[in-house]
Length: 124
Image 1 (cartoon, rainbow, N blue to C red):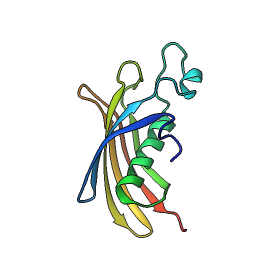
Image 2: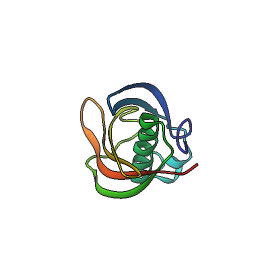
Image 3: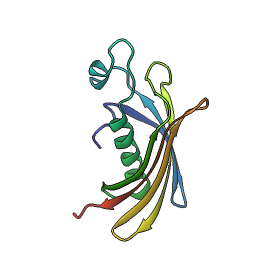
């Protein structure tokens, strides 16, 4: 995993029937925030997408790569100071060579990301 324990920590996970709820804690000391608005850090959009991919890998137990993104709405700015813990809701429906993934990143107050795409399994 690229970002786990560098950009975020996994606090908890609940997995059942192709769906997962992952509670993560953003790590404000991550070097990515130094270049992404120092003093007022925000989560880079690409890191949100990678976070979803990593949670999908935990859900499926497979090494995955993004094949297509059909929707990726960044609906609000997440910040390690304003919203240090987030929920990543992921569903993965098996398709040829991978999974159709739907995911959101949110907290109790708002939704930050709405994602739909196809992730393919990497060969061993």
